[in-house]
Image 1: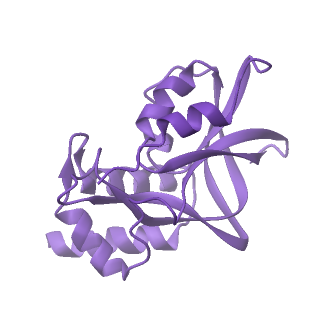
Image 2 (image 1 turned 90 degrees about the vertical axis):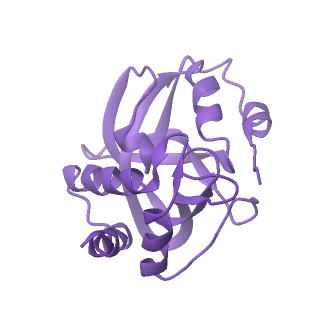
Image 3 (image 1 turned 30 degrees about the vertical axis):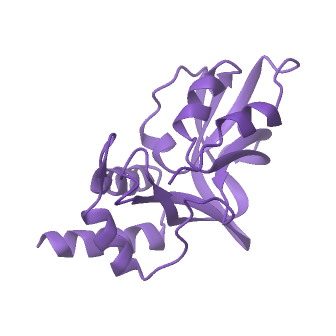
Length: 188
């Protein structure tokens, strides 16, 4: 199963008029910035909530045993904290490949902690992509994460690194932290 979105993303935005672009990370982009950036700042976007509802067939699982990673789900009145990176347009070649399993770049306003804002891009895997797994009880999500491994390593590392990164940002994410608690209970 694949949901390769590289060509779609590369045709959606042309960066000729933009020397630098903000990109918002809410999952592994918070704790794994494996690309050059000009600036990094905590930020949030509005109207979205983070959920472990996207399947990972290429990084944290396999086509036969997909892992679970986060995507954003539209929800009025919510906000999602994460990390914004100011990058040059050429970085999107790497990011489009990294986020290729169902994620589409969309434009969104970014709100920084100092009260300023800027337009940026965020990768979101919508319900219409073939890797979307959808909602499940948090204990079931933790069980799937505990038993999934892919080319980028164990799915559990993704969850634990994300939970730590959110704590480092002083962000309370009940969904992520509940799954983390279930995972740690499985270990005990």
